[in-house]
Image (cartoon, rainbow, N blue to C red; front, side, top):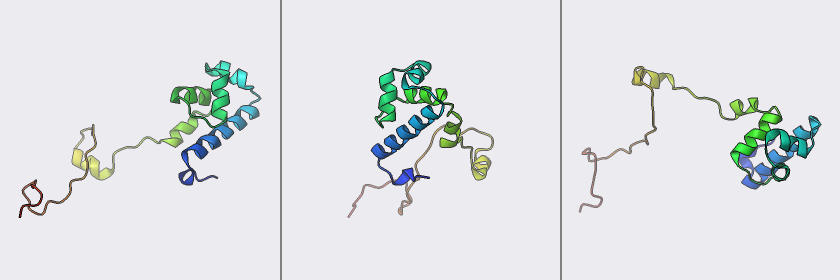
Length: 116
């Protein structure tokens, strides 16, 4: 199993393209047939398999034809609130993220900077 984390962006694209090409061949699909079923051009399939960047929609269409959509659930799993967050929210749904606040030694909430 490859460690995508340690790979550069171009290397990740090349590996994904290689794997998609292998899957296509295993399903006995030509690039033209895959393109037709996915609703993309044959050139798009060629570029993806060669490791070129593509639009996300084209990538999803190809994954669907290659029956690889279940992998998307594992790629970005749905997350739920942590138990302590549920207690703090008291049934409310969180709608945005907030950054962590740094501790202010003066305690008044803000400062001018160097007040000497």
